[in-house]
Image 1 (cartoon, rainbow, N blue to C red):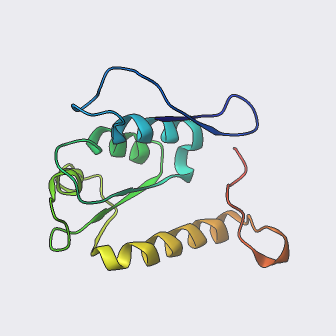
Image 2 (cartoon, one colour; image 1 turned 30 degrees about the vertical axis):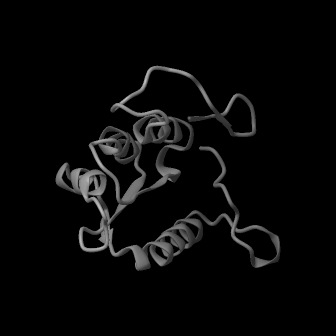
Length: 131
Protein backbone atom coordinates (compact mmCIF):
# COMPACT_ATOMS: atom_id res chain seq x y z
CA UNK A 1 0.00 0.00 0.00
CA UNK A 2 1.37 3.39 -0.98
CA UNK A 3 0.31 7.01 -1.00
CA UNK A 4 0.83 8.88 -4.25
CA UNK A 5 0.05 12.37 -5.42
CA UNK A 6 -0.34 12.32 -9.19
CA UNK A 7 -2.12 15.68 -9.13
CA UNK A 8 -3.48 18.01 -6.44
CA UNK A 9 -5.09 15.08 -4.62
CA UNK A 10 -3.28 12.32 -2.78
CA UNK A 11 -4.52 8.77 -3.15
CA UNK A 12 -3.89 5.35 -1.66
CA UNK A 13 -2.77 2.68 -4.09
CA UNK A 14 -2.65 -1.07 -3.58
CA UNK A 15 -0.12 -3.21 -5.38
CA UNK A 16 1.07 -6.76 -5.65
CA UNK A 17 4.79 -5.99 -5.29
CA UNK A 18 6.94 -8.58 -3.58
CA UNK A 19 6.55 -8.72 0.20
CA UNK A 20 8.95 -6.56 2.17
CA UNK A 21 10.02 -7.62 5.67
CA UNK A 22 8.14 -10.85 4.91
CA UNK A 23 4.80 -9.06 4.73
CA UNK A 24 2.44 -7.23 2.42
CA UNK A 25 1.24 -4.67 3.11
CA UNK A 26 4.43 -3.50 4.82
CA UNK A 27 4.71 -0.42 7.01
CA UNK A 28 8.09 0.50 5.50
CA UNK A 29 6.55 0.75 2.02
CA UNK A 30 3.70 2.92 3.29
CA UNK A 31 5.94 5.16 5.43
CA UNK A 32 8.42 5.72 2.58
CA UNK A 33 5.64 6.75 0.22
CA UNK A 34 4.04 9.07 2.77
CA UNK A 35 7.42 10.71 3.49
CA UNK A 36 8.01 11.20 -0.25
CA UNK A 37 4.61 12.88 -0.72
CA UNK A 38 4.27 14.90 2.50
CA UNK A 39 7.92 15.43 3.56
CA UNK A 40 8.10 17.11 7.00
CA UNK A 41 4.31 17.05 7.36
CA UNK A 42 4.24 13.41 8.48
CA UNK A 43 3.58 11.92 11.89
CA UNK A 44 4.24 8.18 11.84
CA UNK A 45 2.87 5.98 14.63
CA UNK A 46 4.29 2.50 15.24
CA UNK A 47 2.28 0.28 17.53
CA UNK A 48 2.70 -3.26 18.84
CA UNK A 49 3.92 -5.75 16.27
CA UNK A 50 6.51 -8.36 15.49
CA UNK A 51 9.63 -7.85 13.41
CA UNK A 52 11.56 -4.91 12.04
CA UNK A 53 8.91 -3.56 9.66
CA UNK A 54 8.69 0.17 10.23
CA UNK A 55 12.36 0.90 10.98
CA UNK A 56 13.43 1.92 7.48
CA UNK A 57 10.18 3.75 6.84
CA UNK A 58 10.55 5.65 10.13
CA UNK A 59 14.06 6.58 9.05
CA UNK A 60 12.64 8.03 5.82
CA UNK A 61 10.04 10.02 7.75
CA UNK A 62 12.68 11.45 10.07
CA UNK A 63 15.07 12.24 7.19
CA UNK A 64 12.22 14.12 5.49
CA UNK A 65 11.74 16.19 8.66
CA UNK A 66 8.67 14.37 9.99
CA UNK A 67 8.13 12.78 13.40
CA UNK A 68 7.58 9.23 14.59
CA UNK A 69 6.10 8.11 17.89
CA UNK A 70 5.92 4.56 19.19
CA UNK A 71 3.92 2.52 21.67
CA UNK A 72 5.80 1.69 24.86
CA UNK A 73 6.94 -1.79 25.83
CA UNK A 74 4.67 -2.11 28.86
CA UNK A 75 1.46 -1.79 26.82
CA UNK A 76 2.66 -3.62 23.69
CA UNK A 77 1.78 -7.27 23.23
CA UNK A 78 4.95 -7.54 21.13
CA UNK A 79 7.50 -4.71 21.30
CA UNK A 80 9.33 -5.77 18.14
CA UNK A 81 8.30 -3.06 15.70
CA UNK A 82 8.09 -0.11 18.10
CA UNK A 83 11.10 -1.35 20.07
CA UNK A 84 13.31 -1.57 17.00
CA UNK A 85 12.24 1.89 15.81
CA UNK A 86 13.13 3.18 19.27
CA UNK A 87 16.46 1.29 19.36
CA UNK A 88 17.39 2.72 15.95
CA UNK A 89 16.90 6.23 17.32
CA UNK A 90 13.95 7.17 15.11
CA UNK A 91 11.30 7.60 17.83
CA UNK A 92 10.43 11.16 18.84
CA UNK A 93 8.41 9.80 21.74
CA UNK A 94 7.40 6.57 23.46
CA UNK A 95 3.92 6.39 24.97
CA UNK A 96 1.50 3.90 26.51
CA UNK A 97 -1.27 2.89 24.11
CA UNK A 98 -3.77 4.95 26.12
CA UNK A 99 -1.80 8.15 25.48
CA UNK A 100 -1.18 7.73 21.75
CA UNK A 101 -4.42 9.39 20.62
CA UNK A 102 -3.80 12.49 22.73
CA UNK A 103 -0.18 12.65 21.51
CA UNK A 104 -1.30 12.42 17.90
CA UNK A 105 -3.89 15.15 18.45
CA UNK A 106 -1.44 17.40 20.30
CA UNK A 107 1.29 17.04 17.69
CA UNK A 108 -1.03 17.59 14.74
CA UNK A 109 -2.66 20.65 16.29
CA UNK A 110 0.75 22.04 17.25
CA UNK A 111 2.11 21.58 13.74
CA UNK A 112 -0.97 23.24 12.25
CA UNK A 113 -0.69 26.14 14.66
CA UNK A 114 2.99 26.61 13.82
CA UNK A 115 2.29 26.48 10.08
CA UNK A 116 -0.56 28.97 10.32
CA UNK A 117 -2.85 26.64 8.36
CA UNK A 118 -6.31 26.91 9.85
CA UNK A 119 -9.50 26.08 7.98
CA UNK A 120 -12.60 28.30 8.07
CA UNK A 121 -14.74 28.32 11.22
CA UNK A 122 -11.72 27.64 13.43
CA UNK A 123 -11.30 24.02 12.29
CA UNK A 124 -7.76 22.92 11.63
CA UNK A 125 -6.90 22.08 8.03
CA UNK A 126 -6.32 18.40 7.31
CA UNK A 127 -3.29 19.02 5.17
CA UNK A 128 -0.64 21.72 5.05
CA UNK A 129 -0.11 23.50 1.79
CA UNK A 130 2.66 21.85 -0.25
CA UNK A 131 5.92 23.73 -0.03
